[in-house]
Length: 423
Image (cartoon, rainbow, N blue to C red; front, side, top):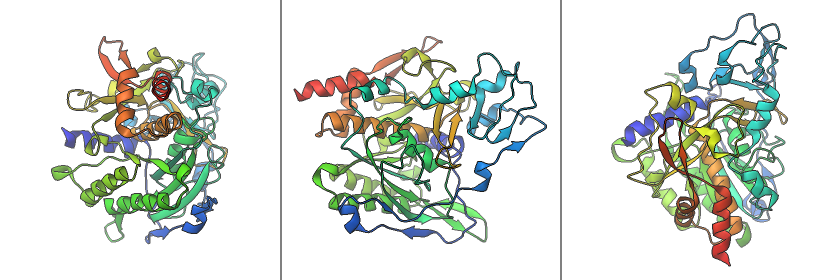
């Protein structure tokens, strides 16, 4: 079962989210910041990555991209960076599956139910009542989050003010990735994030070995383990009230027959982080903790704060072999939003991307942000209590088929329960 789950999670994280590694530069770069400056909580940025010119251009097209159901394994019907101004899309039913960005040019003729500006704005909402908590002052203030992911645009308006550190471990190339800005914004983005006032410590890391002769990349989790070790080292010099409490890693892994190079080392360092008071959230948390995560789709043009707006992710609705693991008999299953999200883009500090179909990558930083809110409410929060309280306060979602899935996080009740325990 785990092998099948890992295969699905890898597909969701690597393909759905457009993860890729620029191997045009064959020598990976490791560049760490000055610990003395980090200890003083000075902002430390070891480098500013370059914007890929292809990310900021709009391409005039004479034919629409072909829509195939299999595209939901990637980013949906990809209309990003396309000039569609000459088309009549008023009867096009595939727009529900479309993904687009700041650089997409739309025609005047669109379905009445498809307003790309409104959809982009709707997608910024973290959902499930998170913004109501922000209005109550629960914003992650005073909590630090670490993210280990691909290269970052350190100047993006969503998180530049919250970014305390940007370092690199085994990174190929010097360009901004699509993935790094996305996960950063989902965790701490000003208009997108779950915890917009949390501090962000970001380590870019390509956990691969690249063979220039064969043009092949192979997973090597030793680099990821080194990045977690670095977070632990950083935490040792941070002031007591500003410790990193959670690490977001949008990748899963397994042990034994499901292991890849460095899996045992990764397991060991996550256990070390746990002992140091750091919650490490991956796509497969049950390897180190007693819970699993699963993912919610959202119906187009629905209120993401309302439970009945959610359903199974698009990929699970349309591709039979994309089995969404819903076995609740082994570990508690925690559901959080995935589809229909707007993300910080890779085309400059004001760029955004809307993805109709999400990936497991998006749920992990969402959960890390949720944990930061809980830590703000209770500085003594720990992963076991977090999961227990989610299950005590969460919702059961009834799908259109009548099937019931649990547990969907109810952020408002979760925070209220945590605050009540503190009284």
